Image (cartoon, helix red, strand yellow):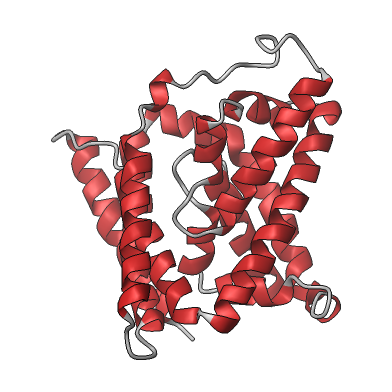
Length: 269
């Protein structure tokens, strides 16, 4: 039963990463397993935590491959409902993150870092994504070494962003102009493109997790204030606008429901 629950958590993280503007790191915080993942992913702890990491990884991969097309389709047809539900998840997780940040006396520099992270997310939300060129494989002229190198570097940067709660890996792919070709490679199981994508994910994970774990060990309050700023600021990046229609009011109901669910999920020990 515990393995099934871990698989389900991994699937939710994978689904979150498939949505531009939504962060897998935020989902891990909401599910209260962010710290556990960081602790488990190391050469020292990897072996004894495989029983946790394997179903989590299988769930994440399943979420991306099985539901990426469905989620993208829902984003096109019911963007307001989907985004309001995720905003609810974010709002519900904020009290738990704030509690962790306040475990010790607040230092002004740590609070300033949180405000800077919040301002960064507002800046990201102000970028006009419609003007960013996202080309398909055909637009890139087919598979080439230049495209593979670009995919590796872009995915590595996006994975780094994905690990940080609040910043969406898919949004970074969108901003770097490769979201469409990455989703195409995943949907069509294009092995020649999945290789540099997979290597980029691995490289991004190794670098980001090592850095964040050092922050968690030596500067935990600074890290949690940064996470708080990123998570709270992500609301501006995913807010779709409100239209007073039936779907609009259903979306508000979804926001309240998901906020309550996230509050109880992220608060449990």
